[in-house]
Length: 109
Figure (cartoon, rainbow, N blue to C red):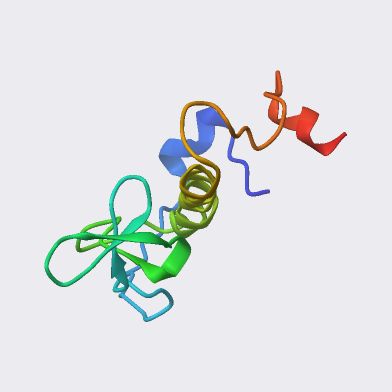
C-alpha cells in the first residue's frame, strides 16, 4: 500500500491521470421494468421474459460508473429470479426461494 502519513501529504507529489472511455461493457440491451420484465417495442411487458446483467439495457442511463456492472448481475439477477418464480408459481407468498436468512452469510451454510 502507498500510505502517506498525514503530516507529509502537503509535501508529497500529487499525480493526475487522464481517463478516457473504453469499450468494456454493453450499455445497450433489452428494455425492462423494475421487476426485470422485458418490454417490447410498443412498451408492453412480455409475459414470462426477464433480463439481468449486461443484457438489461437502460439501467444506468447514458453512463455507468466503474464497478457497477456487478450490481446489474447480482441485483437484477436476484430481482429477475424472484419475479420469474412469482410468474411461474404465483404471487401471494406461495413461493419463497429459501428460508429468509438473518444474514447473507447464512446462505452459505
